[in-house]
Length: 359
Ligand SMILES: Cc1ncc(COP(=O)(O)O)c(C=O)c1O
Image (cartoon, rainbow, N blue to C red; front, side, top):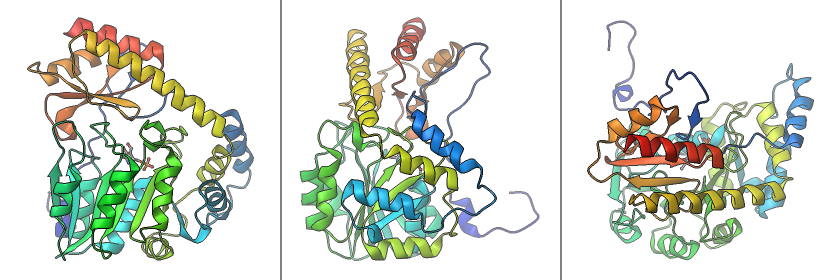
């Protein structure tokens, strides 16, 4: 760092978030790098946003009352136990701020979501990472073995980004039951709606049995609102109180609150998107198999593809030169892989055609 103003020492440990590259490409760019959904927001969600525009001279509701009430109605979790954030990432980082400090430990699998290393680096806590198993799944037994008196937080990404695999709620239930109650278990369910191993309501039932369990969910994926930033956590009243204390009160803007509240009224749209994603998943998986490319058992809206001995950089750059942006495994914790988000059929076929040229 250049001499000048001084920063605290932790800054050097905080990794730079590996943002997806954008390439100058003249033509239609196919963006399959950020696990977004390809559909625009529902028309009534757009109307709710427009209606809110006229009152932007006012601060947003710091209590996020309407949205929290809607989430409570939808999930059956009392409103006092619903935390809303500027994306689910804000809640995770706030939880780290509220729970972690030098001398304590956080346990998570690796490779997993690239924001998790921030959690330890920001707080000075020690990160204990546990490798995924051969199938790219969380090894919960190995993770449980890493829990000690120093552990404050365990993060389980289910389905996991970037390996796309998921565990059923019964496995999470048994895992949490085995851990001491002083350990908070945050299950990041950003992609839960896409998992064929469970109904999203099933993990919510686990909250009644485990007061130390927190489920993180987002409006960024199946609801298609990542540009607005809204996510939520279902946990204890204490968890909400702690997270709210460390954040500024107005972190969730008024448009995001209105849009997310309206999006919850359109369960049929969510179901349609989940179905469409499952169809594209089958299509991609069978096309990849035909090309002799292995991928993990995806329960999300993306595939984690093994490239064998092919040069990962060449593949990623070759795809980008053809207007198709995907993520290199190297940037996500495992070399020799590609993470490819499912787009529309047209976009997926453009990826496959570009891949054929590159390989
Ligand atoms: C596992 C996981 N959790 C959370 C997020 C981000 O969620 P949000 O947009 O709600 O901050 C992502 C986004 O890629 C993710 O992959």
